[in-house]
Image 1 (tube, rainbow, N blue to C red):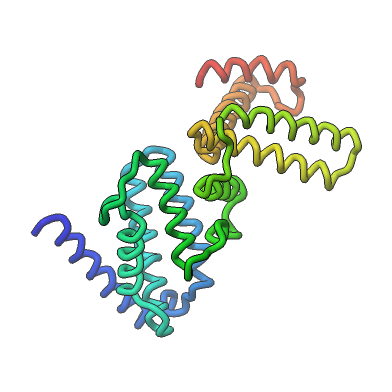
Image 2 (tube, rainbow, N blue to C red):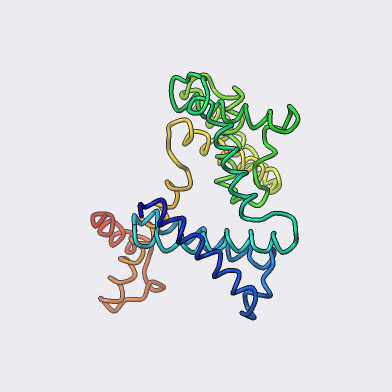
Amino acid sequence: MNDKEKSAEEFEKLLTIMDRLREVCPWDMKQTFESLRKLTIEETYELADAVFSNNDDGIRNELGDIMLHLVFYAKIGSERGTFNMTDVLQGINQKLIYRHPHVFGDVKVSGASEVEQNWEKLKIKEDNGYKPVLSGVPSSMPAIVKANRIQEKVRGVGFDWEKSEQIWDKMLEEITELKNEIRNRDTEKIESELGDVMFSIINASRLYGIDPEAALEKTNRKFIKRFNYLENETLRKGISLHDMSLDEMNVIWEEAKKED
């Protein structure tokens, strides 16, 4: 038995287990799409943490948890008579074949960028010849990820800077507008302009091939590591952070930076 056959066997076993759980387990029996939603989001973040930490064992385990959720949703769908796992698998198979004409057809592409552009164009054609470009962006997606996805999607139809360097003038423009509103003390407009600045920064990240979510998370972790160092050093010296001046804390902070 090869790996593909073993995978199919284990997947069938998972489907059988889910059938049994929905029949006899009180917790599994009461779950709905709505009750699973927040749990699925949590599992997705746990997978993201494992990926970020380059933890292969963690990735494997979290993928299993997410696989369980996929099977769970399909089982509930079959009980409602709206769709089942076969429908799900057929749907994704058909989608992948349709959106990869350079693999399963005779379309020629010059590289990954053109593949992405074709992907977005094909998505637009799927719904009777027209689908709003941004209609596929989930409204509940985290703001940074959402902004990045919006920018990727509009790039797919050519709405993008001709040169990456052009983004810097736009960022300076947005920062100037933010400073003006700060001077005017208009909270609502400050919020709006700050959002524009952040959107531009995310756009710059995209243009230079940087994942803004990953970049910010690395900074979060770096800050936590440095602050933990600061806190531990003060505890070791018997000093309270509350009793220290900012200058005194900065001395230890500079030490922490050397530990990166």
